Length: 443
Image (cartoon, rainbow, N blue to C red; front, side, top):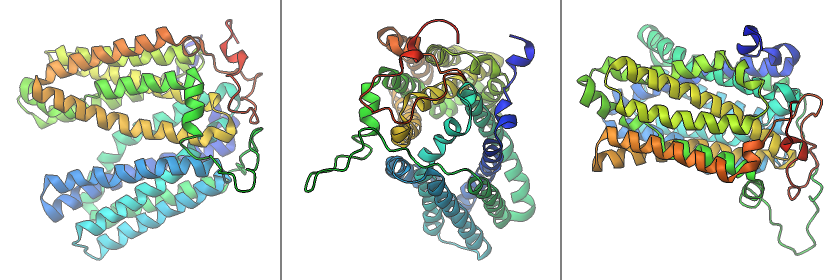
């Protein structure tokens, strides 16, 4: 592997115009969302001066995501996915325009502001499962992981750039301008989606009409969860992700660690958050090293284990430089795990179930970190922040290792090569995973 091969693989941007348009539009939308997120936080604080209300922003965002995420998965497997994402993206643009209007009109109602935030979050939740299926439909099989890495890099970059831009925009032009940027970025994303080819869902081999009077058993519970539980590669991948986030999520403990070891300096607290993003961005820029590896199941297991060990190291670290290094390593490991898991999930889920499986992945990705932060705060209140970090990190690493030991299909899984192509869309959900994906030897 040459040094160029170790850098981020940009082939998806060269070989697929639809993917390139989608990536550009989504990247702009992500920056706009980061800017608007800071604006919402400051506007709520200005209206209430209450940490309870600023905390309610998370509730207004998370509840629609959790409630409507699985609904979006069922819709993604029932209608043309491009049409669904067009409609939900248009909804996000309209809610962004609503944020502009309320800010320009001098709105003093925090409930109205949170209602608009919840509506925007709901539109995103309905469209997210369908969006997750786009790379595997737009790219050759050997470029899907690279496409996911490019999306992850764009997200990490928006986390670094967006808040800084938000500060400049809010200082110069205040809330209406910040929300207007989000609306314009949303229009760019909508244009990219409009230009996509049709994304109709193939009819499944077992997708027969029910007999008259018979109960039709479909939906996220039967569809997404059933296919996950029947395929060891899928449930093992999700189990590893849940172990990493639920047992070791560290963000809720940052303020307490900062208070104990670094005198509560707010600059240090900001460095904690930045270190994770820098590590993730660095891993993304060097993602060619991992996206060209076909053993994505093993790569995810190793990355999730490193995440847990790095956070345990953060709990033990004394010097600031060592603490930041541990967080950067954790951020890099998280990016690798997310990219490899995303590719595995898209290949292993049959196309007619891919929306529902993606919705489960989306919900797990939201709920896991939130539960993990609660677990960390609760354990720290009973013991201490360092104990919670070390115990959680080691527990996560050991659990991921255990998943790998008992789940050989995940451990041995190989993503298809270009000549294999994506899994046939008509494979019934009862069928086992593709044998070619479990064979040894290079592809």
